[in-house]
Amino acid sequence: MKTTKAHPKFVEWFSPNVMHENSIEWLSDLKFINDELMFFDDLIKSYTLQLLDSDRYNESKILVEKLSELHKKNNSLIRIVQRHNNDLKVMVDGIDQPDLEETYKNEHRELILKVNEFIKKCKTLKKELFNLIKAIIKEQKQKRLLE
Image (tube, rainbow, N blue to C red; front, side):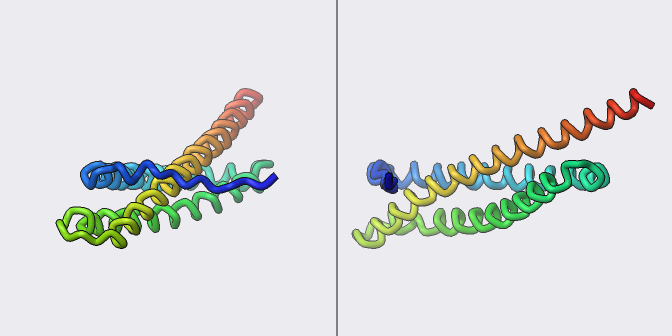
């Protein structure tokens, strides 16, 4: 069975104000995610020895690699959304440029999908990291109780 890619057309009805608000909201979300990713880096640094000593080394290595990839992708998305927001002038300049306006709408459509997918990936990584750290903390508490 072959899947087809969805092409949402609802962006065509968005006003420039709504598209600007979307861009501002995305930037806010991405900057918050950047702070979260830095927190995860610090959290991993705090538990480095436990991550290296534990039986979960391979799992932690994969999560650290994912975290690094998300850092890069987040920085890239921030730049793309900022540029996209700056290019909004095409929609509000009062000059009728149907090709440029259609290109802008298509880019907005693609950004909706990209940003939402990125946020989902971040939430998944967040859950995985917290579960890993939680398991390590439980392990440490059990070792202390046994001693």
